[in-house]
Amino acid sequence: MPSRTAKTKSISTKTAELAFAVPQVVAHRVARMAMAGPVPSVRDRKEFHRMVAEKNAAFMQSWQAMAAQAVVANQALALSLLGSAWSPAGWGTPAGSKLVRQAQGAALGILNKGLSPVHGKAVANAKRLARTKLR
Image: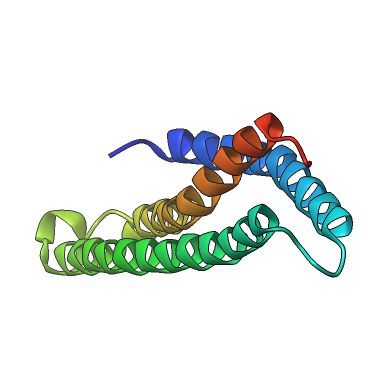
């Protein structure tokens, strides 16, 4: 499992890439909507349908990934908590700081899993739409 620093770097990198990709995608699609006017072409309708379908799919994947990671994290936290309570060797050491670090790592893991599908789709759309002419 990657360290907390690696997860943070991954999350910050994905967030930065999202911050650049999303405005590009929105600008391209809003321009396409404006140019399409009241009667969009078949190509425009296909892109507008794709826009909605991709968002639904990416956010569904994101929620599923976060839920699955939350289950894994909760199991690990519960096991760690039980282990520290039942281990006589651990009674003299503060288990709270270890649990706090583990909970922070779990939260970062859940965030990273949830960000991945949205990040992947937005960055891919930015690349794809940059190659596409509006008309």
